[in-house]
Structure formats: C-alpha cells, structure tokens
Image (cartoon, rainbow, N blue to C red; front, side, top):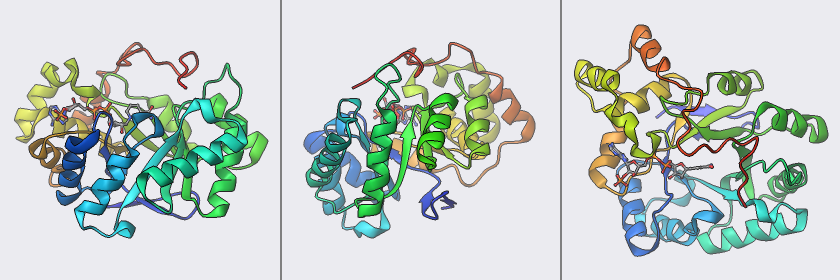
Length: 276
Ligand SMILES: NC(=O)c1ccc[n+]([C@@H]2O[C@H](COP(=O)([O-])OP(=O)(O)OC[C@H]3O[C@@H](n4cnc5c(N)ncnc54)[C@H](OP(=O)(O)O)[C@@H]3O)[C@@H](O)[C@H]2O)c1
C-alpha cells in the first residue's frame, strides 16, 4: 500500500475504511473483519456514535494500534475552543485510544462563523500530542483561505464528497495547489444509482472488475484517498482489490465526464448546508 506524505511530515495510507452506520456488536464484527482483510485506516466521527465500536474492534482485531491510522471528527456544536478540546478528549476516551492519527473539523458551518476558533483548538491538540495530524471535511476554497490567513496553518487533509457524479475537479485542484491531500467520502456514491451507470458497467466488463472497483480505482488514479464503507466481508475484500489494474487515460476521461453540477447525493453544499 502506498503512503501519502502530508504537509506536516506525517504519512497516511492511500486507502481507508468508512464506518458510518457501523454501530454496536454488529459494527464491531464488521470493523474487525475489515482490519483482518487488510484495511489499515479507519474513519469514524463523534457524530457517528461509534467511536467506542471502532475502539473495541481495534482491540479485538489483534493488530497493533500503531499499525493503524484512526481518524475522527469534531462536530459543529463543539467549535468553541474549550468545548473542542473536551470533545476530543471524550472521543479518545470512548475509543480507548491515547491519540488519533488524524482529527478533522466535520463541517465548516460558515453561518455560525466558528471554524477558525475550532481550528485553533486542533492546532493546540496536535501540539499536546492528542492527534498526529489535523484536517477538515467539506471545506471550500474560501474556508481554507481563511484558515491560512488567520492561523498560518493549512489542513493536511480535506475530506469531501467525491464519486463519479460529483468529481470535485476544481476543489481537488485547489487542494493540490495548497499541498492538501483530498480524501473521498461516499466514494461509491453510497451505493446509489451510480453503480448502475451503463458507462461504468461497460468499463467493469472491459477490465473484468466490478463497478465498485472501477470507481475506487478511478479515485485512486485521481490521487485521492477513497474510504468505502461495507458491512460485508466479501464487499470489503472486493473494494480493496483495485491495485492490480490500471484504467487508461481515455477511460479515466469517460468517468470524469459523468460528473454533474447537481451530482451531490443529498444536496449538502457546504456553503449553505450546516451540521452540528
Ligand atoms: N466527512 C463527512 O462529512 C462524511 C460524510 C459521509 C461519509 N463520511 C465517511 O465516508 C465513509 C464512506 O461513505 P458512505 O458510507 O457515505 O458511502 P460509500 O462508502 O460510498 O457507500 C457505502 C454503501 O455502499 C455499499 N457498498 C459497499 N461496497 C459495495 C460494493 N462493492 N458494491 C455495492 N455496494 C457496496 C454499502 O453497503 P454494505 O455495507 O451492505 O456493503 C453501503 O450501503 C463513511 O462511512 C464515513 O466514514 C464522511
């Protein structure tokens, strides 16, 4: 597995595992299976209410903590500085971990106007050793520019909605120019109609792969980090099995052309949409 070097000197894997909706005992079983299938990066969030599930799965997997990259996220309701530090400590407590490898602001919530204060808390948390790297999710160029202007420190990662119907070409270019690595949420479009797209079905036949594998490989070749979620051990293995083929430049363009201006799954435009 390839490791991306981040702008703070840390390294993270080029592929990860999403855990939204994996909760409780069944969630533990799915995440243990993912780790035993070879996933080394696990994505959770305070708001998924499963940091305990993730922590338990890590303990039960038998894999050393320091061989895994664990990400969590701060919810918008805790963006005041002291609240942010307390929430992060609570997340670590729930997960039975001493540190997160990566900790992200979950949404910019621009109308609330508190993401710079929350970012200052993350900068401090990194200095305290509570987290190795810090980043954001769903940040637009104006939000990233504001962080840079007011704190001088840019996120290592921007985790954004990215799949063939919303390929984020401009945002990826912006992240690139700023030295920020793009990570893809809902990389399979949350198993929506994109999996039935005829062009992707044709490409799947051509490369002798599944539609999911074509999509995840396309995201890998875009130099982004997909973090697909699956509760099924079979689909977990299928999703990881994308490192033995290469999509041609012409076919990459075909997939790029599927993007739509309104292609977001749930119309969650971070300029307007807020989540706490
Ligand atoms: N930062 C943010 O704001 C944000 C927002 C959303 C998500 N995320 C993170 O990103 C992760 C991934 O996104 P997501 O969970 O929204 O969606 P996703 O990974 O695109 O899709 C997950 C769905 O696809 C199904 N699936 C998985 N592999 C498949 C395959 N090979 N073929 C067909 N169906 C397949 C899963 O069902 P089964 O489980 O039954 O396999 C599940 O219903 C999340 O779990 C979460 O960690 C972050």
